[in-house]
Image (cartoon, rainbow, N blue to C red; front, side):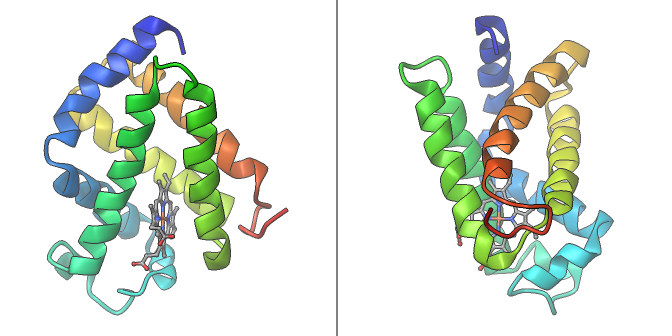
Length: 153
Ligand code: HEM
């Protein structure tokens, strides 16, 4: 990412991060509605999707996803940004290994994240491209550690 792209990401991120839990909830609701088999992985698997928005555990996970992105976006443009991203996303990969989250699930979530951000921030094509680059970068870090089925390699 060049400095213009970093600036685009930091500026547009101000919108969803202003209401982090709601933004994360919007992403996760879409994710689980469109790809319901992912529900099996969650402790709230028996809660109907439409009730999830008020489920505390669900909202906590939603907020955590946003937090991970917020930490990453803060690191952009700073000294040691690549090392910091490596540290943050290695931790994400490691935390999820016991849950066997497949690459397909991660990719499903990637599509929803970009879709929700595009709508929330009204991203144009080049702004969406900057975001896509960031997500590609951090996903490469996760995917170094797992096989297609989400097991450690
Ligand atoms: C952008 C990618 C993702 C990020 C940043 C992310 C972030 C996190 C974080 C920070 C936690 C809490 C730490 C922990 O308990 O280990 C967590 C938990 C969890 N994640 Fe993710 N996650 C991502 C993708 C996914 C995907 C694709 C799934 C697929 C189903 C998933 C399923 C879970 C589950 C089941 C938990 C435990 C929830 C709970 O116990 O309440 N995550 N995630």
